Length: 244
Image 1 (tube, helix red, strand yellow):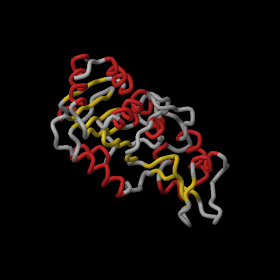
Image 2 (tube, rainbow, N blue to C red):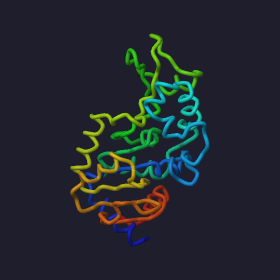
Image 3 (cartoon, rainbow, N blue to C red):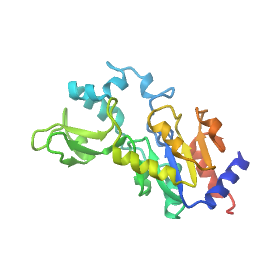
């Protein structure tokens, strides 16, 4: 893998419009469970499967049960940015990386210092009243029981994309614009099996498509460089490489 890391380092040193596209694997190294792994939420037992609980219809019909699961399994306050988050924030500060496009909702990229982050599936740190639109922070959700309500009486909903909901148009537009103009697209910690997000990489027309993942993906054949392993561990190894 040393040869691949050196090539990646060389490409990054030559880049000033790099974009990173990441999935759940970026956050699992911070202790946040994903959905599809051996210990993921899909393999745990609840009265309803997670994909049902985290759906728009379930939220409207059984809001209290939704929040019981959401507070218990979707919010992980002990999680801290790992080397992947930190390296990406460093590259942005150095003028190498233009944007992070993430499917995660945990806010760890921002916690590490990244500024330009397109959160395709929203964020647990933003919540809004479904009646008046007033926004609330995460503390409001944590420090209430049952269904959190606005002062106007409306139900407060997490600003996350549930099953059955569409992605935010402005977020999608910003992410696709960044990918279109990238001189290097790095994809990490995702199986590229969740759509429409996975299809976003088709908007990249460059010749430096890098895939970093523990297992193979449907897009491996299209990659110009592939590295298999945990993305945090791989990016951390780059610290000791010579610069070009």
